Amino acid sequence: MKKLLCVVVLLLCSCSAFVEKPRVDLKEVRVAGVDGEGIDIDFLLSVTNPNSFDLTLNEYTYDLRLLALPLTHGSSQQPQRFPGQTTTDTLIIAKVPYSSLIEIIKRRPGMTSIPYQFDADLKIGTSYGDFSVPVSKTGLLDVPERYRPKNLLDRIQEFLKGLGDK
Image (tube, rainbow, N blue to C red; front, side, top):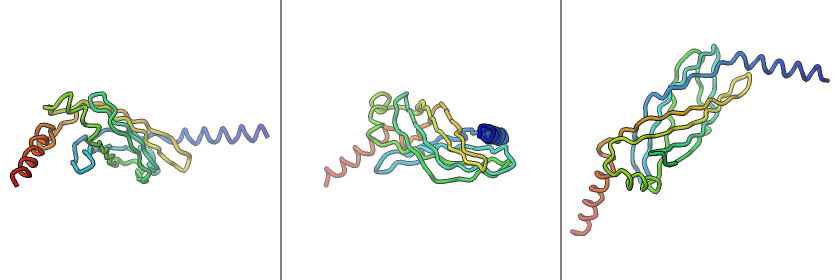
């Protein structure tokens, strides 16, 4: 029985040695839109699968900090295939609710860019087993003119002023 267990462990270890973890690069970060719930921030990842076989993204989780404030986290279980020996783009959309943005607006209302910290954990599946690929990126998020807090507040003020004139 001990020999059988040793053989199984040895086989599992040797199989995982055949799988190279994919390389994940952050290709782009952008404010994608504003709606009634908050702001969408897109994180476009470039995933390079160095293996001769396909890998599958089974799920991911993420955490996002802006100005070092924890703003939002999320997850998805929508599978995505990464073909062998190719680079594939994958998009993670972080929804930041307005309630979380209030502190940022208080601290830096005239901002044109915001420091961010993006951490994700990609759960990758293969026929040899599953593993995690951590992703951690920091940088500056450029805030388009139309989404800057001062401009949004000015538009809200104009809208409210228009309601008062009626």
